[in-house]
Amino acid sequence: MNSDFRNFSEKNIVVFDGAMGTMLYANGVYINKCYEELNLSNPTLVKDIHQSFISHGAMVIETNTFGANKYKLFQFGIADKVEEINRMGVRIAKEIAQGKAFVAGSIGPLGIRLEPWGKTSVQEAEEAFLQQAKTLIDEGVDLIILETFYDLNEIHQAIKAVKKLTNKPVIASMTINEDGNALYGTTPDVFTAKIDEWEADIIGLNCSVGPKTMYDAVERMRGVSKKKFIVQPNAGLPRIVDGRTIYLCNPEYFGEYAKRFIQLGIRMIGGCCGTTPEHIKWVKNAARAFDPGISKVEEITLDESRTEIHAPPNVKVIEKESKSVFARRLFAEKAFVVSCELTPPKGCDPSKIIETARELKGAGIDAINIPDGPRASARMSPMALAILIENQVRIETVLHYCCRDRNILGIQSDLLGAYAVGLRNILCITGDPPKVGNYPEATAVFDIDSIGLTNVVKRLNHGLDLGGNPIGKPTGLCIGVGANPGAIDLDLEIRRFEWKVKAGAEFAITQPVFDGALLEKFLQKIAHIRIPILAGIWPLTSLKNAEFMNNEVPGASVPAEIMQRMRSQTSIEGQQKEGIAIAREALKSIKPMVEGIQLSVPFGRAETVLKVLEAL
Image (cartoon, rainbow, N blue to C red):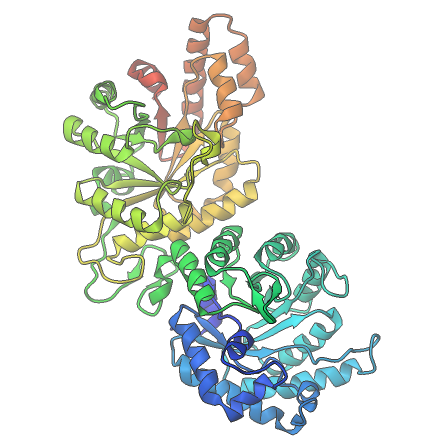
């Protein structure tokens, strides 16, 4: 485990542990006992709980020192043991962590009201936090986590105290009600802005509510600050069942929300009250789905160039140029690459598609793109069609592979099988949801999205499976991703594109482009992470086709002036000619900006594509 938490958290999804108090209670320690005192009287029990969380996937464990301040310990008559309890809390955690996990020094509220709501001054509060934090820092914690604060004034004193003592990362985490506000009514946008202003390194939410409420709140918080965020929900709301306090949020549901938090951009996730090692196991599974290498990060370290990897001695690194002819053309020869998209048939007869592929190969096309269930439609297996085309036509394919229909086990099996039968180019896509297709009641899987899928392929390319274990000979798949220059939320699209490139994307294919200026704007925004771009070109075949593209194809947008040009043609023949003219103009406009194009083939008619390519 990298010893620098700040550096580690920049590159990885980080899984925190769950509820120490819940586990102590489950082991027979009643709630009227001082849990922090167990660091002295029963350290073995505390060690066992730390170990259980680590063995179930926690990458950060928190010291059993949440309430180890002089005010809370005073209630148990042990206020004189502040330093001793905190010291032992760190030593116990470090003994178990031993390089397998980071140790976070846990500091909670003082348990009293501060001015103006109570008689304790802010200076007295800061002194109490200084006393606790100094011991934790002196004993060598990797970071400090201030958690379960409901008073903005109090967490301010805690942040000030810790910042006076250390440059190590500081997490400042508030707790909220079911309405999404802090317990004094402070809204998320207010307390997030303040915590950012007070220079906490990471802003968080923990305790009091379950994943759903926390998700809604952190969505609001992300619009206020650029800082990293951490979420540590309860396992739902507590219920009294047969006289016992039970949290009803099961681990699988908790893991499902972990995926949603990751998709939202949250890179640190753990649990609070009611969360057990089993809950953390499901969080780890979710994190691994998006970043499969996290389970063995000590073995695999990506450098800043993204193209180098420091792998175990038995893992061979495959270079881009050796992956496929398509990759050699794109990367080594710097050629302008032309691919054409052929949609799999709805039935079991691929003969027309194969014949079209032959025509396109004869025209000098570099590769055939094969979409995977576009618009959530049921069609022939794209992988089967890719194999048929490569074997019968002898032209390479770019296989679109989507996450909608497969879990992470099936994904790995498919990718290994695709490489084994000779497929070399993969376009990683999330996939359209079933509700947009012909079978809206069908179940979608979405264990991961396109970012997670890119991570999976990258890992296989370096000889590692989802768990970070060597697989023998690595795959050599050329990794592509999708991009949408016309996205409604362009900032989100850019962020996701950045994550895709960081995950290992080597080229991208865009949604159909009708507006060169729109593409140019997108390319400017990704200049800092530029990889080869193949711009999508769609020859419109009719006004109805243009209206369909504009209203029913996810991510596609036909500008008003293009729609007007199509409307100006009163015959189908005229509309077809106008569609080809528009595509040719788009091709001429965008060619200097990109490394290639992907041409859609309307109704499988090669002659339409060939007329467009005359513009080259």
